[in-house]
Image 1 (cartoon, rainbow, N blue to C red):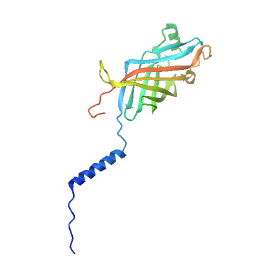
Image 2 (image 1 turned 180 degrees about the vertical axis):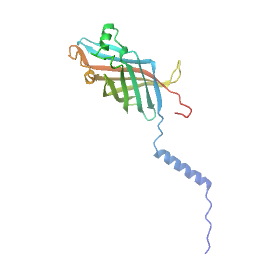
Image 3 (image 1 turned 120 degrees about the horizontal axis):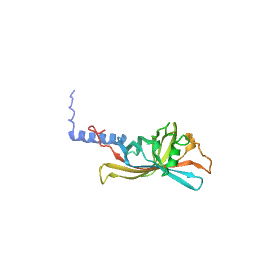
Image 4 (image 1 turned 135 degrees about the vertical axis):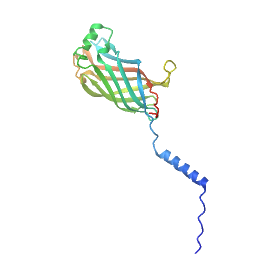
Length: 213
């Protein structure tokens, strides 16, 4: 019986097949997430609140001391984690006696609860530059879920000073202070229950480390 030798493999065909396999694998597997950490620039971070007073007008105030950071994957449009910490005694409404009252146990009780904390739990993209950010808000020692409407205003290298890649964001939500146990003056003719919160800030992307982390 005569055995014929097998033809030798075509090296060009092998390279072509390998390329096809690589392409199929790339299409089948999800793109690798590129999660980067961003730190909120304290010089460009405004946290405002608005609450109705006696039905005449709203009192608008600020918290002057706050900090935060978060992780963001621009390609996937996800926010895996994030945290903002606000110093409660930094409340400011441009009225000294009112600010002193807001620091008392009737409202923020700053001697007992030094900080207000928001921690990210999820993010849902709703448009090219908008989304809903969910998280847990801890106020007066009580933690409850909240949802913020977020708008990405700009994402680019900063044109001045630090010149790092920076996100410019706006976010807002409305909470009921009574849900955190702040019940002082809840009569509709006194201080409103609903408090509108608004965040305006710039966040700087941290430089990658030696291993690209």
